Length: 276
Length: 314
Figure (cartoon, chains in turn yellow, orange):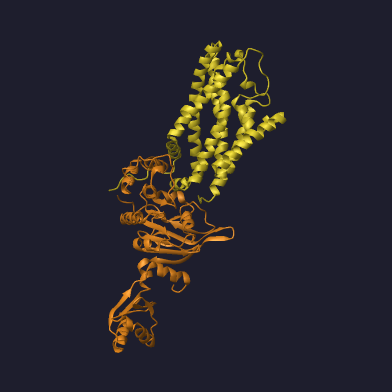
């Protein structure tokens, strides 16, 4: 009896669907529908709870220290979500590093490559699937953060009239897009790093050390660091620019950094022997 | 369940290589292999651990880049794996799947990736005897079940060429017997099967073709029967064990050097034809020794392999 045979091997859509199948497991669902929205809620609650009525903070952490007056403006609803996105960059980066490094570590890469030998297509499909899931998680986080913002606005007597006007919707959409762009950059760097080092532990250690202690120590000692270093640029993307770099410049330069690192990872992946 | 036997790039050889070599630094892992594996055979890829079997298989599957040499799989050059791999199934070393996913979900990932209808997943699970365990998480599988899931994954694409790298590794005797029967039954359905193993007895029972390697170099390729028939021995047992020394002396004076094996003498080497057996019979009868056994013995693959490694017989 002849049964169904191969149907259209070698299509990008197959790679993305296969990656999405892998992500249909409890831990991922909990992270996407639970942890990420919860962080947005916590961030929003903390922001509203700590907001005072004094003059606005103009320092480098101004985005994370709004006044009650600023929270009542257009975009106040999503201030907590945007603040959470800065921390979620790390979570996304770790997830992307682990996703590709585990393929080497578990030996699953060789099974995948037998069914799809085009290595760059495999990496690209993984990137698309992970970015898609990240975008969905951030929609849920935005919704959860917004609900929390309304609750906290009632508690702190913050006016909400400007939140959902025409400008408010635009700001909300922009905040979501900038946050996804920012964590997407972190994610792609994580994907490239995981592919290059092939170890989840080493990849996370390198990424964590670079993006957090190193860049932030540098930032504290050199104001111009925020104009050049990728993690600080990605933060500027999430916050629509800051006092050292504009959103457009941060996005363009951040994209160049991502492109270079991803290109190096692609060349390495194409040439590397799969002995795992 | 049947397998496709014709496709683009069809050739009389399922695998052929010319000078296929892989080096890592100064270490040559695979050394100028010239393989020619006919379609339709069940071939054993034999050699000790570290002989270069897995590296060779990885080169054939596009996972490892050859340092030099070239080859074809199903008639398609090695540097175009995307064209022949849709017709190839493979289990390389230990099966590797996602621990948190079920057996079925793991196979769905691979089927989706390869553009294979997911209905096929249930068929291959049934084929390897995991039909009722497909919904269990992979991490709960025994080693034998993991190996069978690996074979199910290899069967997804209805391969014309099935490559199994040490499929009995780590299995208990029952598992080994089950795996042997499974491989044999799959082979009966049509695909060319290449099974690597360092367990020579297993290979001898399953394979009708052999590729033998040692230290990355090719020792032998050809029919299993041809290799074994060239090394037949003769077993000679006198009626009375006390006659063994006198029998050995008689044979020595007639030009035969026999070894003692328990209560028998054995002769090994090429050229032990019927004329030789008749001469032995006449010699012993003339010497007054009655034989209760004068028989040919087939060499085991292990003995033959040992002879090839030491260069005694080529």
